[in-house]
Image (cartoon, rainbow, N blue to C red; front, side, top):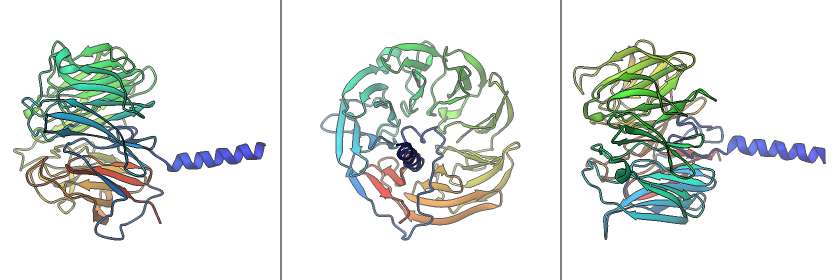
Length: 426
C-alpha cells in the first residue's frame, strides 16, 4: 500500500509539473513565464496547422485556459450591439457555453471589441467589458453569479479606448482600474459578492493591468494610470507610495514589470521610467526616466502595448515603430537594436513569453518566433505563421491579442476565429 501511494504521488507530481494552465492575463503570475519543457525546439514548417479552430467575432482580448476550458470575449454589431463571453473545450474546441449581453459602444475609439481577458479562479470566471460591464460567472456552466454595471454605478470617465485593464484577484478581492468618478479610479470588490471593499485614486485610468507584489501582510497593488504610478495597500486601498507622471493620450498600456525590487514602465509618447522600491515595498524613488524628442526619434524605449521583459539586469522591449531593443537596466542605455522580429510600422507589436531558456515571441503579423535574447543580441531559432492578421483591429491588418501558452499548446485569436495549435514534442 505504501509503495502504491508513493508511485501515485510521483505520477501526480510529474503530471502537475508538465500541465500548466493560463488562467489570467499573461499567465499565472501575470509575467508570461511558463514551462516549455514538453514543447518542440523548432518548427518543422513555415506555417502551423491548428489542432482545432472555431469562429468568433472581433475583439482585442487574449484567451485564457483553465481546467480543460478556453475562455475568450468578443463583440457583435448586429442585429444589436452586444459583447459575449465564450467558453470552449480545450481539447476539441467544442463550445461549452456562451453568455451575451447588450452593449452599445459610446465614445470608444478602436471599437473592434472587448479588451480585458477573462480571469478564472475556483471555478469562477470574471469578465470585464469595454463599457464597464462586470460579470462573475460559473466557469463550468456560464451561470450568472453576480454582475455590476460599473459605468452606471461609478460614473466612469471613459478613456478614449474604453475600459481595458484585466481585473486582478488578490486574496478575497477583485481589483480593477476603471476611471470611476469620486476617487474610484482604483477599485476593489469582494470577489464573491461584488460588494465594494475600497476605492482610491482620482486619476484618469490608463489601459494597463494592475499587478500585485509582496507577500502576506505586505501585498502592494501597482496601478499605472494616465497620471501616476502608484502602490496601494491591497487590504485597505491606501496609497503607500506614488510617483506622478502625466502621460500624453493616457497611453499607459503595457503591464508594469517587477524585477529585484525595481518597477519598469514604458509608453509610446513619454518613454520609460525605472523605479526602485525599498525592501518592504513602502517607498519608491525614480532611478531614471528617459523620453525621446518624438515618436520616431526615441530614447531608451517607447513601448506601445508590448510588456517588456527583464532578464539578468537587461531590459528587452519593442519601440514605437517595431524596433526590438536591449537596454541596460540601471541606466536605460541602449545595448543593441534589431528590426527583423516584426515589420516596421507605427505601433508595431510583439508579445514576449519566457521559458527557462527561450523567449517565445508573437508578433502582430501573426508569427510565432522561438528565440534567445541576451546582451550579445537577438538570436532567432525558428519562426512560423500561427494565425492570419485581420483588419478589424487596425486597417493594415494585425493580431494584437496576447496568446495563451498552456499545456504544450498555444491558443490565439484574430477577429474571425480562435485557434489551438499543438506544440508538443513528437
